[in-house]
Amino acid sequence: MISRLLPAFFCLLAIAPLHAATVPVITAKSAILLDANTGKVLYSKNDTAQRAVASTQKLLTALIVAESGDLEKNVKIEPSDTNCEPTNINVKPGQTYSRIQLLNALLVKSGNDVARTLARDNAGSVSAFADKMTERVRSLGGTNSNFENPNGLPAQGQYSTARDMARVARMAYRNPTLREIMKTRYYNFRFNSGSVVPLRNTNRVLRTYSFCNGMKTGYTHLAGHCLISSGSYNGRDVIAVMLGCTKARIADESAKLLAYGLNIPTSKLNSLRLSQD
Image 1 (cartoon, one colour):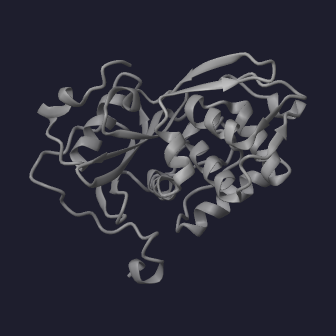
Image 2 (cartoon, one colour):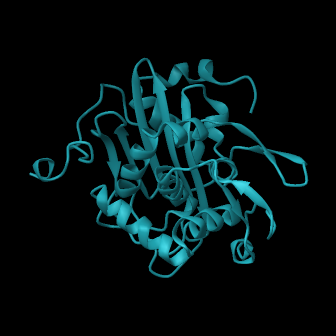
């Protein structure tokens, strides 16, 4: 059995019924829900299908950078770091920022320029960092992923699965630094000029419900709308991965899947809404 071959921490166990409540309707092309503490899979849909995962793979970028340490060290922006679009923080060549500052901008606002900066700083080049991404997923037991860049922009030969991204998400959830950043709803990014730009987290579920505490959004035309979300309630911790959904449904379906995993009745969701978005 695979659970005997892989370390227990990385093994996603066989699907088991959670409770008598009905699983919410999931229209996303691929999805998985798991217990963040045990790794037990609580729901899955096409979770091993290879797909583009868009900016959710920045979670893996952040994990590698966080695990490398020395997060207070400053990084100088190079011209090659800013050669990307469309979502950028608009850092400029010659400017200097700490790794922890860039990690916050990466996970809160999903800056593609920040992802390239952190990748180049960590591995020497974007391509070398992409190799590290693929190797890191394999070390977690994932065998259906290949990465070509740190930001999730479309690239030939780049793909992952809901199950592999759940492995990444579970490890990120256990990292104290990332755990703190991923639950940040608003972050003030200070540029070298001294100007401060407030960044609003792109995760609408995080901004809407008190039980949500992360993790990362993503969108490209190829991947569709994607969201890796996490939640905690009454001692339970769950992670939901949704890939290939529509803008109109991604937040609602993710919130309901989290609620299902947390044993929160749908009728109680409104009472757990935050006072402002």
